[in-house]
Length: 160
Image (tube, rainbow, N blue to C red; front, side):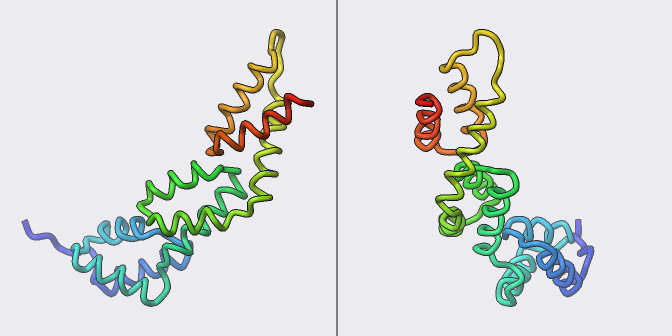
């Protein structure tokens, strides 16, 4: 069966250029999009190279934007951000760079405020410190925060 391109290489390039201009993308998203246009492996590689050369596609920029956005908007922790970037097949270098861009003080403050909100929301008869601590810890782990930092913050709540 002959595989016929849905678009010419130039049409695909124009669409991919727009796709990358609209929002920063990782390489795997752009590759998937290119394949959906009926491009061959060779054509996809050429298109990706051209987009990188012309700075429409920059995985480091994507990773930093992604990490910053997920941290600020969704209050995700480093672990969750790392895992999401790995799923998007972003390189280890770019992941480290992106995580490094998150301000340490802001990170700790965000974790503290999330912990305080969760801690205050746990009500009910027979709820003791241990139960509150466990529920808050599990919530923060699910958000992607590191257990060592969580324990430091929760120890402060118990002292209060």
